[in-house]
Image (cartoon, rainbow, N blue to C red; front, side, top):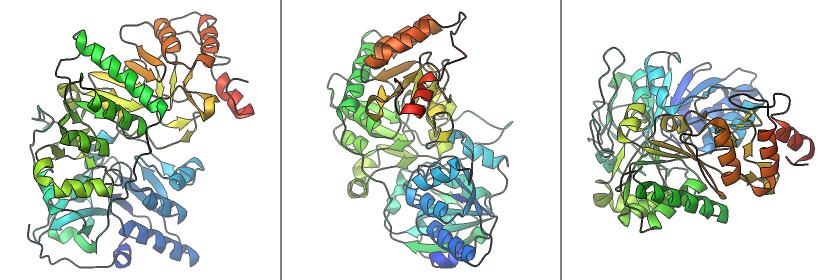
Length: 494
C-alpha cells in the first residue's frame, strides 16, 4: 500500500466543518475498536459553538455497533444528535434517549449494511472511518473494527478518513471484506470454516469521494474488564459442566462447534473457564468481537482461531498482537458485520451462542435491552442474530441484582427481545435450565427450580400454580407485581 496520497489533509476541526446541520453521518468501527476518534469530538465542539451563537445544529448518527463512550457522551452533551442507531453504550447518550431528546432505533446488527444498501435508512451524507493506510487510488486499509465501514464508505456521498498511525498496516492481512449482493442476485456465501477468507484486505473508495484525511495517533478506547467475581465464576462453572455433558451424550460433537460470545465479565469468565478446563476440547470462535481472554487462549492452543468483526482488546494486548503478528495473522479473521453476524453462516457452521440477559421470565422469554420495560440500556446488538440461528442458544445472568432486591427471573418480562421459541438454555449461578422439548409449564418449573434465587422460588411457583389455565398460564392482573413492588419500595419482594 503506497503511503503517499493526494487527498486534502485537514485538522479534525477543519474536517468537522464539512458536516452540515441536518446531515446523516455514519461512523466506522465496531465497539470502540476501529471507531474514528477525533473528528466526531470536533463535531461535538462545533455543535456547542453553533448552539452558543443561537444556531441550530443536529445530526443523524449511524454506526455499526457502539463506538467509544466518549464519542457518544460528547455528542449527547453537545445536544448534537437528533437520531441514533443501532447500538450505544454511553451513559449520556442513554440518558438523552430515555428522556426522549434523541430518537433511537434499535436494530439487529446483521441487518444494518443491507438496510443502508437498500436505502431503507435514507442517504448517508458523510462517512467517517478510521484507516491504517491508504493510497492515491482510494484503496483503504481499515483498523481494528470493520463493522459497516465498507458499506458506509460505498454509499456515502463523501468520506472523511482518520489515518491512524497507531495501528499496524498489517491488519490488512487478517481483514476479509466482500459485499453481499441484493436479491434476486444473492448467492450462497462460500464460508465453510470460521477462518475461510473470500474477500479483500482493503476497501476501495472512489478518490473523488474522499473529502479529507485527518492524521492521528490514538489507541482504541477499550477499557479492561473487572476481575471475575464469584457469581460469574459459578455461572461459568455451570455452563462448562453442561457443555461437557452435551459432548458426553453426543448432542454436541466431541471436537465441539464454533462459539459466539457476547462482551462482558460473565462472557469473559466463561471463555476463561472453557479454556482452563483440560477436559474441554480446543475450539474456534465465530463471533462479533475478539476479547482479551481469547488472545491468551489462542497462545495456549485452547482457541484455534477467531472470526470476528473487531479486536475489542485493551491497548496493551493489541500491541502484543502487533508484536507477534506472524503468529496471530493465521488465527484471526476480521469481517464486515453482515458476514460476522450473518444468519446463513451462523446456521451452517452450527454456532453455539452465549449471551447475557437483563431479565428472563419463567417461560423462557428474554429481555436484553430495557429496564422495567421502558428505559433502554444499550440495545439488542448482535445477540438476536446468533440466538435465532444458532445450533444452541444460551442466555446467562446472575439470578439477582442490587443485593437481591431484583430477581432476574420474573413471571413475565417487561420487554421481550428473544422469545421462548428460540431460547434453548438458561444459566445462573444456581444451575442450568435446559428448555429443549419442554412445554411452557415444564419450562417454568425447570427455570424456577434450577435457576431462580431461593428467596424468589416460592413466589414464582405460587404464580405458576395459581395462574389462569391455558397453554401459557399468566395472571393478566398482576404479571408485573414484582416490578411494581420494586418501584414502590426498592425491593421486588416486600
